[in-house]
Image 1 (cartoon, rainbow, N blue to C red):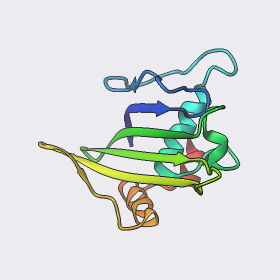
Image 2: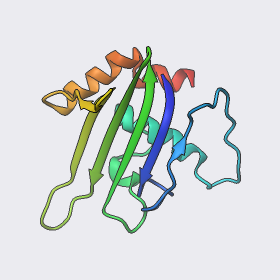
Image 3: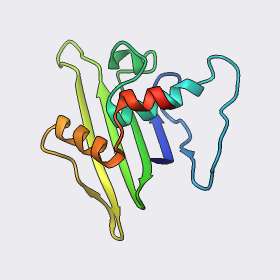
Image 4: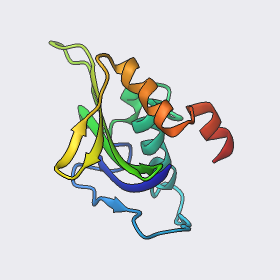
Length: 142
């Protein structure tokens, strides 16, 4: 998997208008900065987008303080193809239970084509199939 573009909205320390992070053209990168500046949050965003897992206890803990919903939009390359994963989560409210969304796209000449499964678990299995990598393997190797 080659990271290409990461877009965050209300994810952990990243607020509503976070600038997209482009990895295109970067072959080796070093994330550096003071504690609490969001370096680990970038990795959490990628793992949450791809596998729905992170270091947090639950998805509500990933939502930026004071916000009700978040999303991660992650584009990556694998075996010469470009993919896009969009995962969203909204906290429960008095009127609604929490909700989540997972969408998987593959790039084509005409734009992105939806290749999501009928259920979230089907889409998650497709992501693992594309990556040939599950969450446990990733965190133990990255």
